[in-house]
Image (cartoon, rainbow, N blue to C red; front, side):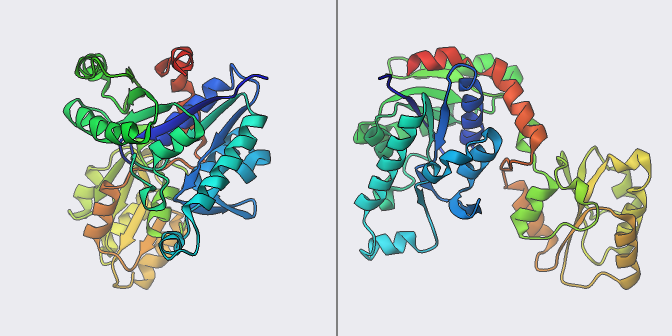
Length: 366
């Protein structure tokens, strides 16, 4: 009986592209293997999908790749608000959580020829439960890929920090993949990283180049970030935002500075600017420049301005409990997740995987 090939996808930290790497590996593996599966052993982002609690990434993979029949095993431990406290209080045990992970993985191994196991956050995530990433990888007998960000010094520092825990737990790290590389620095960065890790028991490879389309949020993501309802043109919710502009200048200046697919943050007291942008949204030469509005501020929008906004159908979010500074800062520090409905991003990612990732070389390492 053939043994299922397993790869544990880890990362040196959040927002390095662990999930996009998993999506890409699944895409490429499906060209070579008959049955490909996915599991998120420890799920820190609970969501309800098909009537059950699963991790957000498990739901994403199930929907993209039609894995609903495996859903019962794709997210064996989903962290809820009190999970950590219940474990520390002795109401649940680490051993019981690990057994759920073992059983789910064993079932997917019976079903699959190739299995992607995606970790959570950096290597230490899950330690409070006794389920950090290297420990889970070692327990499941799954060699690791560690996805890092771009750069040289920071990557070397972060990899060494994470690798220390891998050695402690006996995890088999075989590949470090530097991700979100600047295209003009890709080859140079890879060369220096390979020099820096000479003599280490793992290889170093390049992942994806930095892509604004993959990195930038959609209006739907911004709505989710602030728990707001998108009003106006609902068809615009999956439009990718390429620029964020704080509408603090004069109305004319804001209009002059509009760039392609701009999200404008305009406080609720700027009635003249809101009316102008609503009008511009219905002029073809400006429509592609306005992805939508985010309107913070506790002061009510005037009745006339509100009517004009609604009639224009411009997509907008009303953030009454936020200041302009707070929303701008939150967006600047946010890295957009991929949703199943983000077909443009997913198609681009799968297309880029064809050339950016040497799957046969990776497959041969595991």
